[in-house]
Amino acid sequence: MEEGREASSTFSAFCTGFQDNGSHVEYIFHIVHLQSGCAWKVRRRYSEILLVHEFLSGYADKLPAFPPKAFQSWSLLFGESLPVQRVSAFQEYFRQLLSRQDVVAKPRLQQLLGVERPPPVTASVRRWIVETSVHSTVDLELDISADTFSPPDEGSSPYESTSTSCAPTESILVQWKGASPEHDPLASGKPNEPICVRGLPCGEEAVLEVMALNGVGKSEPFELQLIAPGERQAVLEPGMRVRAVWAGDGTTYDAVVHSYQRDSGYVLVDWLRPAPLSGKKLKCVCEVGDDTDHRLVARSCVH
Image 1 (cartoon, rainbow, N blue to C red):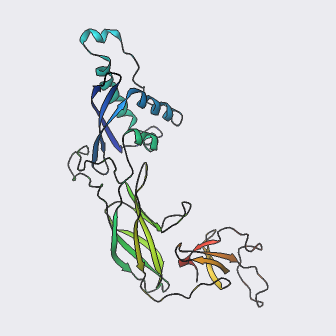
Image 2 (image 1 turned 90 degrees about the vertical axis):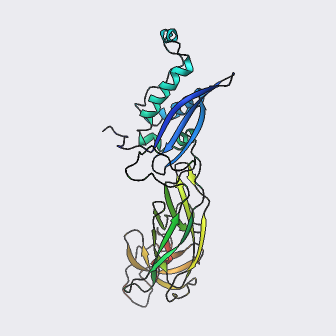
Image 3 (image 1 turned 120 degrees about the vertical axis):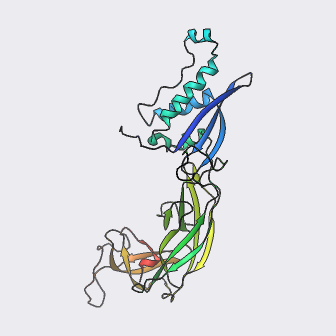
């Protein structure tokens, strides 16, 4: 299999005809998002499709041949107008193009196909998971409901649609409310399947945002405000000495709390130097102190 190609496709596109508007011609496509079962129709001009083809050519090689502006004159003898010839040419073009997952992932192509951001999902607590060996954190399992994800039944045609929506849901993301884009999500998973959020601090308020994702963006967040079960940990205050996990190697080291914003779920720490600390032998990240990397630590990793 060639590089950049996958065994399965994300979309199918059927060029079903065209509409001559006098000043220009629009080609009509029936789009199916195979994973979610969503299907819709979109109309595009030849020039719009050509612009996206030229854009994709800057990122990937060996793209399928784009339908030419003019075909052989002999075809006119059989009564095939230029738009008629382009319908079949576009069908073959998109069949080959949409088998290339390296280009299908581009938002520009998905926008050409008419994909829009998914609608918000709903989320509810399925259960809390309390590990007896871990006293400071609990895990949370969520039930997620996505309106634009209803795959065809097993055994049916993968091209069969179950929803007339152009905003398919591909995956689910869970994060702290207000988390910046560079923060890793708390959890992610497939639509309409339980998702486990691990390591929430016992007794602490947790404000989570649950969002649907697809190739062109995220949905508006669904907010969950919860109190994790269990005994609450000590209140963190600036200057408090703690033990925290350094992301560089996953080991616990001594540190001092610099600041803590509960809404973010992260603690900003200063990693301690070896001295002066009452003559104790300490494991420390380095001699620099508050200039070290990985100062932002999840609350569940601070003790």
